[in-house]
Amino acid sequence: MEFSGRTVVVTGAAGNLGRAVAAAFAARGASLALLDRTDELLRRAYSGEDARRMLRVVDLLDAAATDRVFAEASARFGRIDVLANIAGGFHMGEAVHETSAATWDFLIDTNVRTLLHAVRAAVPRMLAAGGGKIVNVGAAAALKGAAQMGAYVAAKCAVIRLTESMALELREKNVNVNCVLPSIIDTPQNRAAMPDADPRRWVAPEALADVIVFLASDAARAIHGAAVPVVGLS
Image 1 (cartoon, one colour):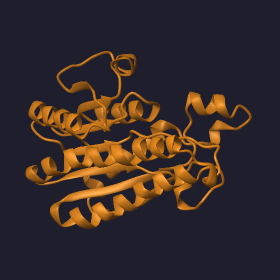
Image 2 (cartoon, rainbow, N blue to C red; image 1 turned 180 degrees about the horizontal axis):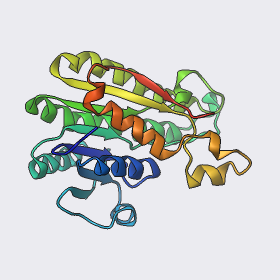
Image 3 (cartoon, one colour; image 1 turned 120 degrees about the vertical axis):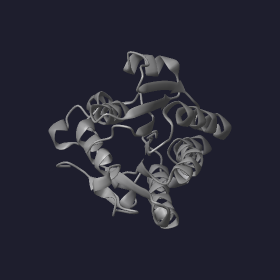
């Protein structure tokens, strides 16, 4: 799977999965527009910019600012071929009837509204260029309800349904839209939160990145609206 001459936008690029996804696309020759919410996070994750890498701070909850960054990436690299929507957030611990407005807003904003603003900026540019690929990140937990996870499940379920809807809207226009459904991702944060668990049963960020790269490749050109479980041994 080769991405030379193609431009990939990665949201949430400074996180554990974002870094793995960026590395996977970079290794295959892609030009990268790497987006995250603070300069500190980006500078900690990446050594800087070069001819094939653009780092930009953007609040994905600001639709106008998001569009400006996508316009800049398109102008710099010539087009946007792939959008990897990695940005998201997690919170649990409240029963549905105890869910605060702050928890609800946080999970809907970080998982759904960021996605909407990103695709609003990306899709018109993909259509103008003749096509593209979008890969969203849902969650295996979104396939059914779970105690103390209602708001998170609802947010990630929305990601799946939006993925399916977009796929039906865009498949005749040469834009593939799919999503991955990871279980627990092996990150330092998850290891710290679950010290008694066996992380070998979880999903390595690099393994999940491989699936995202596949869905963004020509090899997945016939796949539309898939929600692909990536669960390791968990």
